[in-house]
Image (cartoon, rainbow, N blue to C red):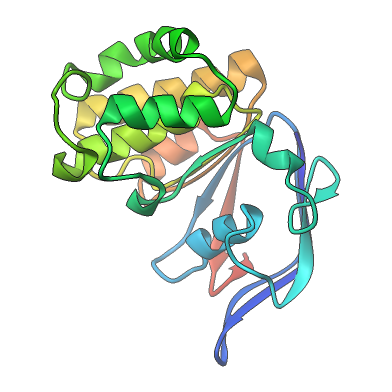
Length: 213
């Protein structure tokens, strides 16, 4: 699925957080978005996911305005931060909840979770504790797995390498690359880790003060 941005502007008070006249992300691209803190990376993702209302302009997913139609949600997986999680559920309950939202049976969820066994490193399933009691790194893993297990056509991850140990960073790098190459998934990631980002991205977008540099 392609994503198109036209004359997109978002302000917080007098501060312009996003000002992008035009940006086209072709289907099957793996885009790395980089920039300093406050550059607008997360704000851009929240606009693409219709979690923020733009002051001007439009975001189109597969040629449909995301603010006027919700069909894009059926093929979009995303994880921006821990607010995406339901922290009073155990991981299994959360995965089944997400699966049900996407019309997946428990058997299908279990089958897809099995592909993340190495990434989970025996630290997530079967622990009989709520998500809120997991480490920051394992919360990150839970959110990423939930976004990827639906096998989305568009995947958006904000700082996916955060809080992860080096081996898990390599694992998520390879998982993202595999999903992009084998499934043709359009992927957008933001990261301060330039090594991994430039290593896997087909294009890198540099944001500075909300503008594409």
